[in-house]
Length: 187
Image (tube, rainbow, N blue to C red):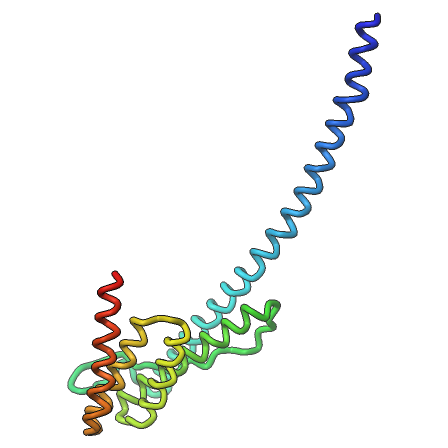
């Protein structure tokens, strides 16, 4: 009888509170995890939605342009190349996260600048191409993307060469070579 009483006391004073405490901690942990996971997944879902909007908007505009003008490919320099369109990204999306919206707008501006630079270069508007490649090069500098910056420097050098500005052309082409050599050394 005493043994049963001790056994009941142990269960009552130690095991039951431990089980209750464990259950309460599990509920609190589950609640905290659900809050943290929603804070992680919501920005990812929002970024995914924006990227999906960019792609669908770009495809829709490209299709509309091609239908309006009956152009699928454009001849440039004796070669056929796909028509490059400037992307006008839909901005009617309501941002829930300011960082994601900032990233989205930066990506949108970078895409537009690259497309305008390419179009200008292919259409022969060298001055517009120069402005846009300088702008894009600065963006790649801020992003620390040396490979893309080197590509911009190469394009700038070629445009200056085309404009018979040989000193500037040499400077930009040498900078492109220097960047590429640094990339090779770092790898």
